[in-house]
Length: 208
Length: 237
Image 1: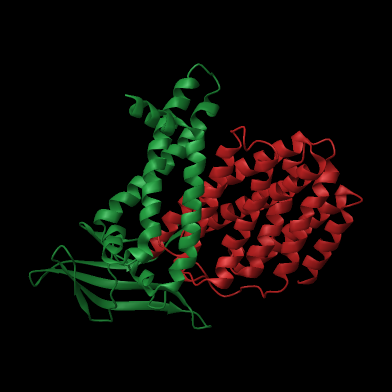
Image 2 (image 1 turned 180 degrees about the horizontal axis):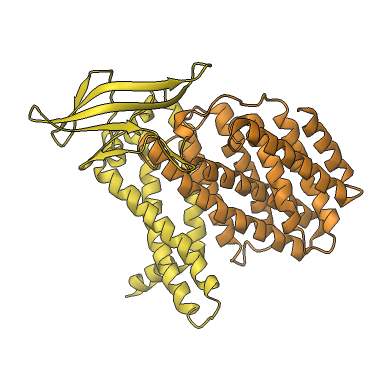
């Protein structure tokens, strides 16, 4: 009971928040300088985070593991403090005062949850295709890049691009489409992830 | 066109005697940005020249409302021209970026993301100067003004990070990339989160939090300029 109470007080404390934030800051500061010095970090963006962390040496990943632990504690701390804050301020009629910190807290927790989910089970692959090339998607479909069109300005820079693609399933064409930049009033949407069922194709400039 | 930043700097220096000169300098800088925008067909916020200039304009833009209710307004407003002058001079060391936007920039989310980031940086810079003034003058009102500047900057910066994530998803297929630039924006966000929480505690209220507000701008400068100059990142354009 005493341990439970101590833990409760620990997670409700603003001092805990400050110590955790300081610790996290120092870890990430270290990591920002350590990353360029180890070539293993070049592949950090190619696979889910937890997979990369378990596949690489603890001597280079320790700060990421420590950051995860700190973030876990910070998550619990945020929950506890948010609930306590809402309960304490429930009598107040000044509702912006009540909800504004909680909006940031909720956003912070939501983003952490999203990162956690993608650290477990996201997939990202990059490949290069040329005109007439095809590639297999994880869902079994085959995508054929029938033509790739570019609009190049006088300086030689690519302004726009598009690709005419065909989808095949078991050797039979099932759909055609065009991946392009879309002009919608004053909104330009470039490279919108083109979603076919549960996979997304991203058309990128090879030099990007 | 490069004579305009020089005239703006002179006007900001003359602002020591009359606020009118600061207003004139701001209008001149705004006119220069407007003309660049018309020339390019977009907000001029790509490349070191344009971003440094935008930073300078943003600093002056926010300096007026931030200092509005202070009784010794001109004595606070003039030191805030320090960062504005610094960034204007720095912007003159780089050539304007007149090349067409790469396709990765051609999305609605790019301009608000960059604009809000620089508004936030400007507010953090204002807060740093206010922190120095608060330490020198020991005035509570200036310390509270520093807090307000950081709070507004923090909200804008949080929004900028969300917009940046959406842009990244459209540009690279992912909301987040482990690159120095992204990591340093998180460090910056966490630092000001620390400031906002620390200021609520008795050990940090007063001078310690004022000093935190000053240190924060060092992190801003590294996140903005240091990463681009010293570290390789997909965020460098």
